[in-house]
Amino acid sequence: MKKTVHILKVVASFLVLILLYSALVNFGFPYVSDAFNFHLTDFSMGFIKTNLTIFLFFLTIWLISSAGASRRLEFLTSIIDAMKRISTGDFNVQLNHQFGHAKNHPFEKFVEGINDMAVELKELEEMRQEFISNVSHEIQSPLASISGFARVLKRSELAPEDRDHYLNIIETESLRLAHLSDNLLKLTSMESDRYPFDMKTYRLDQQIRKVILSCEPQWLAKSLQLDISLDEFDVRADEELMDQVWLNLITNSIKFTPEGGTLAVTLRKQNEDAVVTIVDTGIGISLEHQEHIFERFYKADPSRNRALGGSGLGLSIVKKIIDMHEGSIEVESRNDEGTVFIIHLPISNGHLENEVGSQ
Image 1 (cartoon, rainbow, N blue to C red):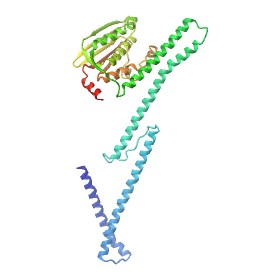
Image 2 (image 1 turned 45 degrees about the horizontal axis):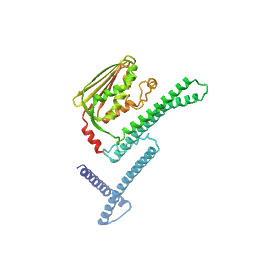
Image 3 (image 1 turned 180 degrees about the horizontal axis):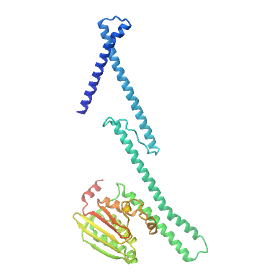
Image 4 (image 1 turned 90 degrees about the horizontal axis):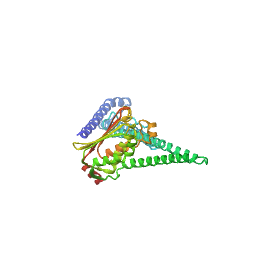
């Protein structure tokens, strides 16, 4: 319907233009004939008027087309320049909306698409640079320690206990590098569409209890008081991935809870979800940091995290695994008042398993 209306408007415009030129020729031709003392027959005069009207009409069309072609050429040139800048890594590209007066104009959509692409590529580039900077920063510290203590070990006058101490530091920093590398590979792999997703039915309460028992040396060393309450039921999930979730969250709670503190873990069945709550009486997380803690390499307290061996990737992995299971994780915390993590995990993920199997 819109196309028909547009065609009718164009035809009407042409007819109006022809009538306008015809009236102009009829009005002006007698004056020109008198000025040059032309004496023409009615047929000749009509023929000349008709051809003159047609000539003026097509001359106008040609001028309009030339102006439009020039404008289109200018537009295409700006598009080519923009694409060249983007290809060289310059994403500060914003094309002018030259066709804003024409709604739904295809060129206008093209401009919007290129502008949006430039913005998104710029954001991706900033994320890439930040990622490289963070990785370099995390690698630099253990490498500096390894290099420095290796030079110290070359001294022949070192006492055996000092030598063992420095060797332990080198071993710890090497393990830290290996852990960082492993987490980076794991996170990158999980973000790909081909990550192996092994869904199975198992007892969630047994899994969480097993993880807590595996952390026994840590919570015993800090004399933490444990409050464990786990309902018994099955879930369908990737058991190996969920092991990483509970291990990361529980070890974090132990790590940031002072001696003599409390760690509480509860598991409840709520409608179609398993709800796990992990509560500690640790150092807490300020409100300004809570919305960023699941970002890669983010540390609410970098100095304290570094002293405890954190890389800022653990919670990113946790969030990614829970998202893969179509669950959710929330954090509630205040400085020096402890932290609460609340995880909602669908008990049955049959439709998710079908999606994974069909890929």
